[in-house]
Amino acid sequence: QVQLVESGGGLVQAGDSLTLSCAASGRRFSTYAMGWFRQPPGQLRDTIAAIDYAGGSTYYADSVKGRFTISRDNANNMLYLQMNSLKPEDTAVYYCAAAPLRLSPYVDAYDYWGQGTQVTVSS
Image (cartoon, rainbow, N blue to C red; front, side, top):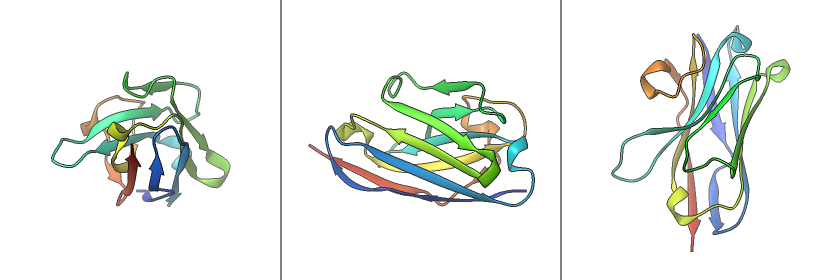
């Protein structure tokens, strides 16, 4: 089992950059695929980026491809999401999550979730 805590959210302007962090505790973080997800107000939670256990393979949703970068530091049990060129439509609660099996673009594949961090992008 792994416990996850997101941080780094906030209020920014369109075009700004922001980096989200996800701190993991518990054993075997390096064996989990990890993902970032977001849930805009009144909408379903979507997968925006995912990374395999070693950091060698990644997945990005079309909406963030070229603007967001997912990375991980297994030595320090950390997951990151670098977000550039932010847009108002990126406004959402952002979550990190862990999947015990291989990288997946599907929300249901992830078993362990953080509490979320709010990102608000003003125009």
